[in-house]
Amino acid sequence: MKLCMIGTGYVGLVSGVCFADLGNDVICVDKNISKINQLKKSIIPIYEPGLEELVKKNYKAGRLKFSTNLAESVQKSDIIFICVGTPTKKNNYEADLSQVISVAKEISKNIKSFKIIMNKSTVPVMTGDKLEKLISKKVKKKLFSVVSNPEFLREGEAIRDFIYPDRVVIGTSNKKSNKILKNLYLPLISKGAKYINASRRAAELIKYASNAFLATKITFINELANLCEKLNVNIEDVSIGMGTDKRIGGRFLRAGPPYGGSCFPKDTRALVATAKKTKTSLSVINTVINSNENRSQLLLKRINYILKNKIKNKKITFLGVTFKANTDDMRESACLKMIPYLNKKGAKIKYYDPTGKKNEFEKLKNVEFKNTIKDACVMSDLIIIHTEWNELKLIDLRKVVKKKNFIVYDMRNIYSPDKINKQNIKYFGIGR
Image (tube, rainbow, N blue to C red; front, side):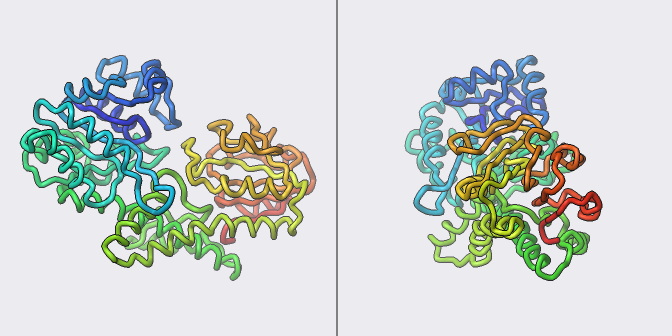
């Protein structure tokens, strides 16, 4: 099939490349000329394991193209995917739909034959209705169909999640579109993915509801970890004991820093904003948002306790600064609050992350990026494990720090307290 992906972020680029790998002809469109030129050279603008290889393979095969010409790309394609950002508005919890609306207007100018317009961007319920009304001002309704097709791709696991999804959700009552789209996704359905055809509004809500529930699980286990620290109970035991219950499941029950990234923070806020418009109470999700936003402060209080309120001139190392492993995404990372706070208190901070130096810390004095774990850790007073990169799990802290007395604050519980303590290293974990 001939597909057009508008937007080359995590969702648009990964989906486009994977659809091409399934044998479709795909054009990935972006207004950023520099990004498109880089993609044509197989230079990937995001860190996503396995993506570069797939881009090279399918671009060379001619199934994958990159363009800045939206009009031409829409005209050449049968199915158009909207994959642009929907960040939180600056003044409230609502999703900013300006990019989605702008793209829909451009699409409406270039429809000459029947097109299926797929909204993969995460949007509030009834956005599809708005897009349909907007496009119908320019185009006859028989020439297009607006469908909600939410994505469920985890950063760092996006390719696997696309190829082996739990479900494919198609929000449409249009039988013609549903038949075409079921055929498009047939290679994934044949591997075991459940195909769900729901109403457009239901599909839009499925995405928000899913993310809000997962965010709730993370917040729940983080709050429980706070209690464990007071009761001298290991949160790991609690997580395993809970997670083996099939009704609960073990995923997203790992205590640590607050959730971050491009989805959970903005999607929980947008869902609350939607509920507010209908005068519906979502007290659980409101509490989740507030608890998550306060978590960085709780972790900083713990650091103050660990250092006995003597932060000034302390050498502190952060290992990993992205919001999670296997991504270069810094959005809503706890480090964005923690590092500036500790820096302001007079700490001298070094950090290491496999995805490189971060612009967010460029203007901070006494905050320095190091290219190796060893350079980041040498002579540190406190080492904070912030992101659970695999390469951090087997390092010999005694060898890299080269200092008799230092402290480890393991925010991901990747180390065994017993093993660390046997090395005469003072250790603190989360909920331990």
